[in-house]
Amino acid sequence: MKTFMQNPTTVERKWYVVDATNMPLGRLASQVADILTGKNKVIYTPNVDTGDFVVIINSDKVVLTGKKLEQKELHWHTGYVGGLKTIDYKTLMANDSPRAVMQAVKGMLPKNSLGRKQITRLHVYKDENHAHAAQQPELVSLKGVIE
Image 1: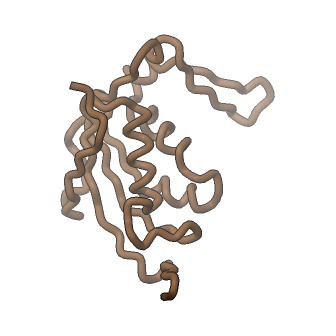
Image 2 (image 1 turned 180 degrees about the vertical axis):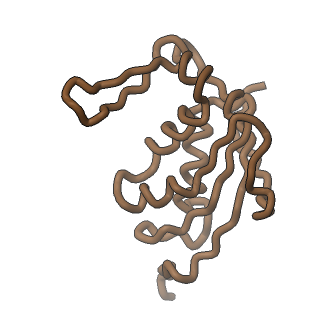
Image 3 (image 1 turned 120 degrees about the horizontal axis):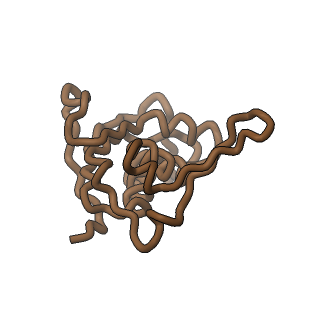
């Protein structure tokens, strides 16, 4: 029996919609990262980008458990001397929740050119309105919703 290796030209991509209402941020990010990398498919090949497109809606309703809302911080550097910037997640979730979700998913993707290509297929929206209805995305229910 031969081992099947996926060819980049023959990958078929689907569109999925994920509702982030009452989902912990880490659980949401890890499951979306699996869809973006293609690990949910039978044809997964590590060196080929086999992932699908993901649209996350209701990013304002993502939950951070424990004291993460007050204690967790996002750090980045501007590239200039003394350019280390920091923002706490309480402010980030109030002002720019799609960025918080995007950063969480990006941290769970490979740190190479394949991961940079995969993050471009992620679209995050604050509410349930999105601009991808023409692609006819399927609604995916993820595990770990807090009741």
